[in-house]
Length: 206
Image (cartoon, rainbow, N blue to C red):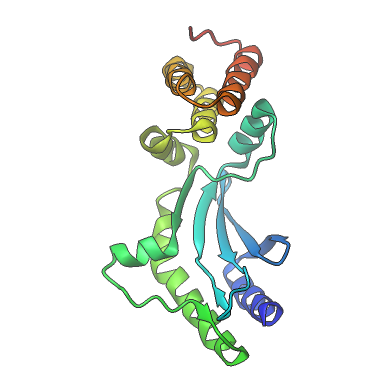
């Protein structure tokens, strides 16, 4: 059933520009779509088998590849993270709708759920993607939402490659203050980034 659903969704989503980016151990499928010259849209589906079937829990993101790739390199682990994200459920709830129907319980559900999911993605997901079409849009979002290692790293890199170097030290100080209150492994990751970032961009911040 999972393979049937994924094949049908992939085929129909392709008409909207979506292509499969990753399928992880048959429990997650990620799709991407280019959004202009700077960013790419992400759409993810939970394919974890459950007793009753599939509960898809769709997620959305917008990623700037240049920011993410460089931040991942300076952090020392893999990239792929978005700089803005939401769940489709949250977007639907915000619009006042409560009837979420992205559950596949049998093969007979595959076609109607795919159709419903694509309609909801168009209706509620596209306005989200339209909010983040450039790096400045993502920077504005990160300024409001960055509270952990990866978002702080994304924000610092985004400012640096945009030429907003005057705003970088404040971000790095926020990151350092936050890291000082975290468990050793998390703090170590943040400190690695601070060291590598300073060497890469030659920006003093402390």
